[in-house]
Amino acid sequence: MDYDNPSWETSYNNKQPRVVRQALLVEYTSHPDACLYIGAGEKISIPLRHLEEKEQAAQGFAVLPVADARRPVTVRILDKRTGQPVAAKIHIHGEAGEYLAPVNRHRIPNPFWFEDYSVDIVHGYHFTTYINGIAHYRLPLGKVYVEVSKGFEIKPVRKVFEIDDRTEEIVIELEHVLPWRTKGWVTADTHVHFLSPQSALLEGEAEGVNVDETCSL
Image (cartoon, rainbow, N blue to C red; front, side, top):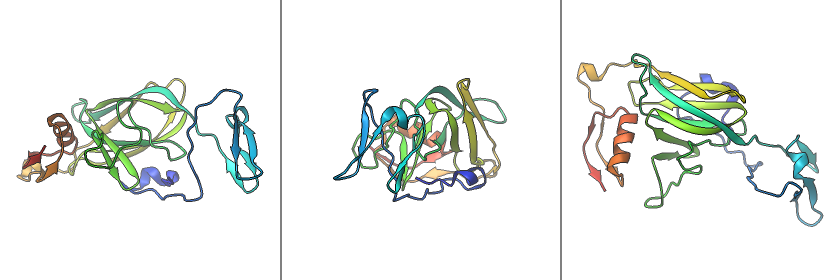
């Protein structure tokens, strides 16, 4: 996924990434002395020890290492006025476009009905999830790209953070910029499907919903 990382902070919320058709993201577990074989017929062999050190190139393709998501980091979403944690919708990805989920969420969210889904959103190729204001992650060292939103009255946030071996916490403040509720407007979700009461409560809070009309369980 190409998220146009250089323009991340100046772009808009919930923007779809470009699908890169000529690249694959491969996750593997192996013995330290294993080799990666690529191609049909006369295969190219690359020792994985070398692959973890630097980019390997041969015969019209390149193999680039992607940093492991191992650094424990707590993400806090705070109301700018009160300093208290608030529910919100969040997306994080790494420098290779890889989606990074909280440790208690699906790493590859399921888009199908009745098939082991949680409080995740699959919007095309853009994955997000809902958190109650505090979430625990394992993040790669290097740059991570964070997007946070909370309904219609809160200004969405897009930020880039540099993660190193001393990073323990990311704090994002949300600003209330449209006081529609105080002027008599109501944010409502008029029809939803297949939610547990706990999921409905978290998602409603994270989207700033004041009224939930119907709920089919």
